[in-house]
Image 1 (cartoon, rainbow, N blue to C red):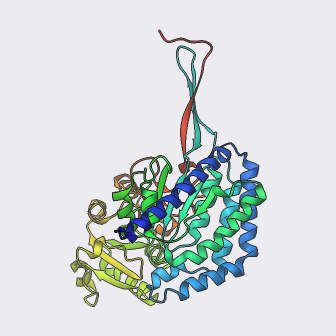
Image 2 (cartoon, rainbow, N blue to C red):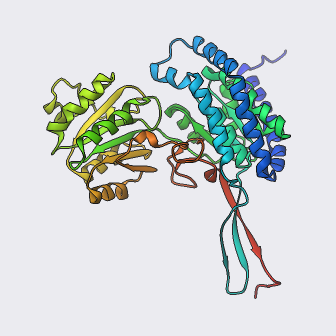
Image 3 (cartoon, rainbow, N blue to C red):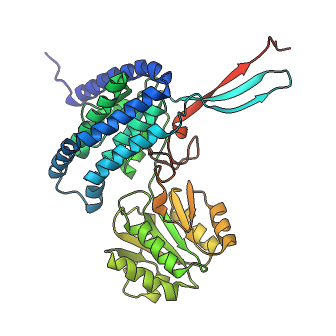
Length: 428
């Protein structure tokens, strides 16, 4: 009697075989890419940027097809998925900005001489093969490709099913750049489909993939952290806070908060919770709420805030731990810097927090007391972005405690090795 094939096992085996083929090709490309001089890498990036501009109509048509195939998306998700001429141009400019940055590979990070005369150098080197798993935002593929290429590491990209056509159109432009520079096409590869089994194969690919970077919702990141047998550079939720201190300039507070919440609500640097000092809440909170309501924002407020504005919807404890990625703002009234920090420690994700104040001592207390990757003083949390930090682009915002924190750019995509230079020394 013939055994009945298990479709799930067949799917997993096919995905594993596809991943192994991609990883072998990436490993071969890694040897070439690690020793590629900067002008060659930069040529690939500049040619890819030119291709993005030349193929803009194709990219937008592919993106329109992706959007049409997913009519039930939330407004925030649709915003992240949508490409426009301006966003395609921003992708192209991002590649050009990465090309303009110094080569991060082979930099001497530190050097010192031991008493025995040995010269020791710490030298930057590529990480190896990177696996990038991301959702919804097609431009992430272009950013990841640019950064990994310049940092000397081949990358295997697996985007979300909603962005499949857009990702393929962008990848075609990256390949055009690689061919123009004479680099292996395996330097930047994309998953052959959006089957979840391919993600499982990536997570189990110890020895084939050197680093996994997930970029997406809580479900994706949780799965990666739980299942990965490969080191992970995690991008957690963006539960960002803006704290308006008692010494804040009211006009600045209104401007910064409006931008931090409403510039783009679907990005991880968007403020999800407003913390405001009790001393100024009665006078300033009504103005802040009116500003944001005029921009289409809704609210969830604690009892102290509702005592000032009774019409505000009440907030639950769960609301303060929710990354809305939408036009919804939590509001809590606090009693000074330590009270604000305590709220952030209980509810935050160690992503980005901001204080608005004219009191330098309060600002220092706040910034020094944070455990978060990024702290800001008198600036919108939406500045937490690799481009805004001068990195050209970013591959994500790292919120873990090891290797890299905050926007991950070229330097953070390198590890290091040591060169030890002697004059015949032997160890006694």
